[in-house]
Length: 252
Length: 252
DNA sequence: GCCGGTTTACGTACAGCGTACTGAGTCGGT
DNA sequence: ACCGACTCAGTACGCTGTACGTAAACCGGC
Image (cartoon, rainbow over all chains, first blue to last red; front, side, top):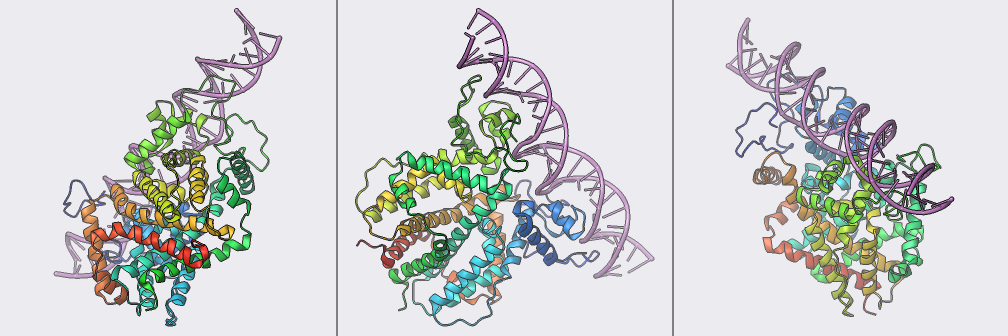
């Protein structure tokens, strides 16, 4: 690594460690860059929205902005950094302008819904945010801060607010991830989605028919109606907040 | 696909859709296969445990079991199926033999802990189970059934038990995913983990120092002590169960 | 016992990936 | 005006999943 070998490597054979956010977008010296970081991120987001995260290759992004493949590396040292830019670009879509209502439950729910909608708009987002570091891009920090602002009045031990934040995020992410997985699978499949569902349904029915999973069979027999799933989101988050109140994070 | 072109393809240019679990491990006719499905799954798991999920390539797995690369495709039609085998092999490690205690909270917590430990032992597991279909491999079904068995006495609307199951799973997965992400990142990084932490810490401190995220800064200032994180697992699950009880899923 | 059809095994080949490296062109601070 | 720093681009390497063709091994039915 180490594109041009500069920077004294502390450890054996390593590039200089850096975070994309501290690297200046424009270095003073050379010719002015032909593309902005925002434009690159937007191009990557466009590709991922259209053709999935796996379609976001350095070659494809470079082509999208109209540059040579390797030129892209002048803007984005590693592909991971491109992913980080994408997460930040998506996070910039949060609307944090409305004033807080004072009802922390309502405010938190509104944020969770925004989060859900964002992930639906950008189905690749959950996969990237699972990589921990991406939770702390500048615009993601703004979201976190907003979330905590909604909890400001509450008198709870310090770590508890972060734990609620983590639980809400986990719930939303998990909910949307499941939703997406069903749809996203179809993309890479060598056969149609209908065929997949038919075959998997037959397998599952066969397994349940063996009687080895009586409790599961019983529960699945009363299958959830379609509308149920959409409402489950609200029920789930309601329970998370209930649990938060029940264990001391209440309105007190 | 369709190695020798058999099977009438219903839709345009597609292989015959199938689930690995319904495909017989041994076809009656030809020579007996040199490897078992279990051995292949075990090899893949071994590689993933040692070198990460990305190291599990068809070539590498084939080499591990001592066969030609393309021979592997006689056992596993697509790489996705190999992943499914891996999930099932890992799920087989659940110990579901102990009798239920009758205390559903304790039983559920015990299962959640097993789940957490399993994911710690196989850090690639969360990434794969995010792909929806993998939640329904045979051994995974056994886990699901066991979970529902623990809830048998409870009188709640039908979908509610599945929703609790989903929430517990989401909580555990999210918890371990975060834990793993911190450790796993280091593997692919072109510099050391310590350098990464230093650089990211400096960036975060810089951002918080701008005053743009006052609430986040305030909460992070009272940083969680190391021990806190381990206990957060129990607190988090406790709240999930509290929320379940609060909204009608109680002991009644 | 034998034979024909099926299955297994394996090598080659292709398109695509991330990115190290090289060289040429262009700008800005001195 | 210079010249070092920087941008841009192309080529190349090793890796990926897997389509395809061929050779060998096996088994069921006769």
